[in-house]
Amino acid sequence: MKNDSDLFLDNQLCFPFYATSRLITRLYQPLLKKIDLTYPQYLVMLVLWESDSIIVSQLGKRLFLNSNTLTPLLKKMEQKGLLIRKRSNEDERTVIIELTSKGQKLKTKATGIPNSLKEQLNINMPMEDILELKKSLWKFLGNFETIQL
Image 1 (cartoon, rainbow, N blue to C red):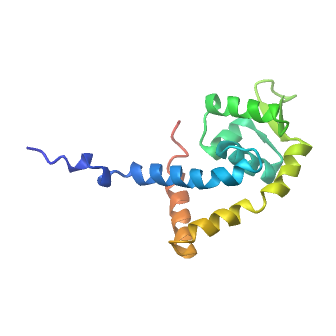
Image 2 (image 1 turned 90 degrees about the horizontal axis):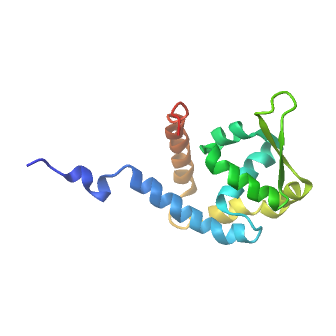
C-alpha cells in the first residue's frame, strides 16, 4: 500500500501560508476598521499612496489579483470617495486609478498601522526572523510572476 503521508495536513506547503494569511488579516481588522478599510482595500491604498496613479492591470500584477476580483473592489472604493477610475485618452481599454484628496488624506490616519501590526507580531518571534521570512516570501512570490492566475 502506498504511503499517504502526502495527504497529512502537516505535510502541506499551502497550509502554513493559508493559516498565516488568515491570522495576519485578522490582526489587521481592528486597525483597518478605524479607517473604514478592508484588508484588500488597504493593499490598494498602499500601492496608490506609493504612486498616486496606476493602470488597473499594473495594480493587478502588484497585488496578484485578476480584474474580476479587482473591479468590484475598486468600484466600492470609488463609491467611498477614495479613488477615481478613468479611461486613458490614448487607449479606451486602459483604466487608470487615481487617488482623490480624501484618499490622500487617509494616508495620515493609516501611518501607525504597520507599527501596530509589528508590535503584535513581535510578541513571539524576533523581528529579524520576521524580516528574513518576508524576504523569503518575496523570493517565493517571484516565481509566480509568469503564471497567469
